[in-house]
Structure formats: C-alpha cells, structure tokens
Amino acid sequence: MQDFAQEFKSAAALILAGDPELWAIVLLSLKVSLLAVLIAALIGMPLGAALGVGRFPGRRAVVIVLNALMGLPPVVVGLLVYLMLSRSGPLGVLNLLYTPSAMIVAQVVLVTPIVAALTRQTVETLDAEYSEQLRSLGVSRLASVPTLLWDSRLALLTALLAGFGRAIAEVGAVIMVGGNINHVTRVMTTTIALETSKGNLALALALGTILIGIAVTVTGAVSLLGLNDDRGALKHA
Amino acid sequence: MIGNVMRAGMFALALGGLGIGAAQAADDPYIVVQSTTSTQNSGLLDAILPEFKARTGIEVRVVAVGTGQAIKNAKNGDGDVLLVHAKPAEEKFVAEGWGVQRFDVMYNDFILVGPETDPAGVGGGADIVAALAAVAQAQAPFVSRGDDSGTHKAELRHWKAAGIDVSAASGEWYRETGSGMGATLNAAAGMGAYALTDRATWISFGNKDGMKVLVEGDPRLFNQYGVILVNPEKHAHVKAKEGQAFIDWLTGPEGQAAIAGFKLEGQQLFFPNAK
Image 1 (cartoon, rainbow over the protein chains, first blue to last red):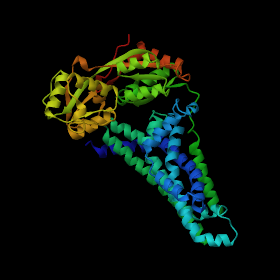
Image 2: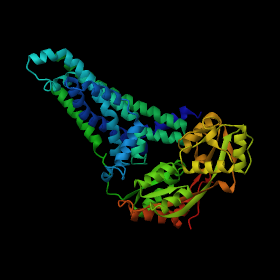
Image 3: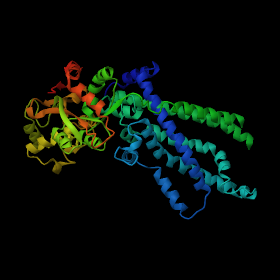
Image 4: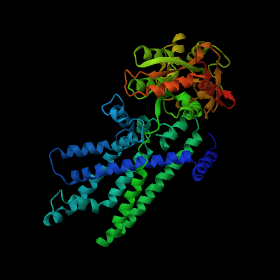
C-alpha cells in the first residue's frame, strides 16, 4: 500500500490551492448531479404524489415497479442511454453522447424513481391522515396534491438527498455515456476510476475522501435549509 | 412564509447558476477519438494532444476503452478517428468499409509480468510461448483482460501458439477480469498472478507491489498501433476534415517527434514508425 497520508495531503493541497483542473472536475460533478436531481424532482415529485393520492386499477403494480426501479443498476442505465444517444441510436441526431448533458440524462433516469417512490410513500401516508379533513373541506384528491407536497417537504428533502447521493456517487453510467473525456466529461467518480486503473491507489483514495467531503457538505447545507423550514412549519401548526 | 419563498428562490438561482456552462461550448472545433486505455493511462495523449491543439485549433476528445469496444463504438459512429492496437481487427474494420484507410503510428511491446517469487520459473526468458506453457504447467494464477481488447487478443494468440486451451482453466488458475489493463494489473498484484501487459501501461503503473517484468524481448510481443478515419460514407456526421488533419499530424514529422519525445521515468514508451 502506498502512503495514503501523503497522497491525501497533496490531494487536499490541490483542492485548497484552487488547482483549476481538480476544481473543474469537482464543479462538473456538482453541476451534473444537482441538475439531474432538479430535473428528477420536477418529474418524480408530481408523479409520486399523483400515485400517492390517486386510485386506479393496476396502481399496486405501478407502485411495486416504481419501488423496484430504485435499484436500477447504473451500468444498465448507462448502456440504455448509450444505445439511445449513440449516432446509430434513435436520438443520435441530437449529438449528445460524450457530453455532460448525456450524463445528466443518465442520472435523471437513475434518480427519478428514487424521488418518485419516496414521494409516493410520504404523500400516501400523509393523505391517509388528512384525507377526511381535506374531503370535508371540499378539496378533491388531485387538488390536495400541492398541500400534501408542501406539508411533507422535510421528508421530500430527504428524498432529494437520497437521489443526490445516488447521482454523485455513481460511476457506471456516466463513464459509459460521458466517456470520461478530460476537461469535458471527467467527474470525481470517473477520475477515481481512472486513477485506480493507473495503479495510483492512494491518490484515488484521497480523491474519494474529497468526494465524501463534498457529499457531506451538500447534504449538510440542504439539511440546514430544512431545519430553518422546520421552524416555519412549527409556527404554522 | 416569505422567508421560505425567498430561500426556495435563492436555491433555484444557485442551481440555475450551476446550470450555466453545463451546455457545451460548441464553437471550438473538436473531434472524438476512440482509443485504448494504454494510450491514455500512460499519459501519452495528455502529453501530445496540446501540441496538436496549438497547431490546428482542433480539440481532441479521447474516449479510452478497450480496442474491441473502441471499434464497436466507431462502427456506431460515435467517434471520428480510431486509434487502437489490433492490426487484424483494424484491417477488418477498413475492409468492411467502416474505416477509410489504416496507417501505422507507433509501436511498443508487450511484456509478461508476474510475482517476484515467480512460481512458474519463467523469469529472464525471452520466449513468450514457452513461458505461458510453463505457467499453465505450474497452474500458477494468470490474470487475463478477458475484454476483447488488443492486449487480450494478443494474449490469446500466444496461448493458442502454446497449444493451451485457457477456457478450460477459466475460473481456476486462469482468471479473466473483463476490465482495463490497469484494473487487471491491480488484480494480478492482489493475487500474485502473472499477466500480459503493454510496456507503456506497466511503466506508468503505480501499484507494482511485489511484481516485476519476467519475459520480454520476444519479437512476437511486438505491439503495433494504427490510426483510422471513420468512413464518412457510413456516418455522414464524421468530421472528416478535422479527423484527417489529426491523422496527418500524428503520422507526420511533428506528431512522430512528439510521440518519440514522450518519456516517463526517463524511458521512451512509444516508438513512432509511420511510413
């Protein structure tokens, strides 16, 4: 084993000294994963909420499938997105393969089921609690969705963080559709994979530690936001 | 409530700010080169591509995968130029019309590496076929790429020459990682196994723990790299002009000098031999 402490020191020094290469990689990771989570939220939350309050035949089956999709293997998603975006694929004309947009698409596919399934769970529980009240006020099931979403915003924040965690840590899909191209699609996880394959294990581990640090920082920042919200919610109650 | 809305707004703004620049700057001309892990992991491409960019303004985006996958990706039209090392497969690629023409670029050589303890006793030899036969005889662990890469294809040729059916030993002493050269060397280091590798990846590899070069210098271990423009007749979007400019540079005096000038730990890794 190589000297991890030393490699970590030099990796941390690169970050602190604002090494442009490393920072560009960190920023691209954040950019891709945060945008993917944002898009997944816009799709997954309404979808999950509708599923939570809606009553229709086959609903149970849809819920089971959605829950199962939370475990989509990233490499399969990468392969599917590659086949779609390849110049020989149906969406090849968009010329998106090997761009950050392709990586965002792959991560959206991975994250949306997580956001939707957790939203469904939360909204359904809340709906069971409040439906009588809401119905007595003459609010229809569909019209109650915004209220239910707003009231479960803390749980939804956790759903988004779960999605973000999945996105930022994922390597199998982004390396396939992004191509790990230097200065274009190289993110933290693909850099770690590359350094590992170069046998630079200590450097790879040091970069991994930084990745964990970033994940903790983002999660912490969002949690603080959530705590502030919590006080507001208590005043309402 | 107003506070909440403001916070949400600021959060959205922050996200939007991150989003700017996620779109690619499409103005700069660029080409996508499907290449192999050895050219990237060794640092060769990182070293020479800036010279090409400075000369022509064309950015080269390298996707580094195994030769087999690189060829498949190029067939799908997901690259403008192919830079790999499996001459028979490259010639087939051109013969089938996927590529325009194949040019020699450079060579290095394959080497057999393994544990310093050398349980098969092959160290110091220069006959790769005899060495592999000895490894099989000793049933010493051997780690194969197993990924249809150029190195994998070369390795299989030598097993065949030695008259050994490795598929029969698969999962026993013969272990296929199905991964890149570096990952395979990591596995070999981890289990004290033998492996066939290109010299460039080996020299630049950082985790040589207890391993060393055991067999080298066999003419059969010659490893030729070739470059091919993906055929615009098959894929109209191929950037033929820029791609050809890259091929001309790589096989011309400047590119060849850049390849020869790339050294790691004082050793030259690739030897230009364009005609």
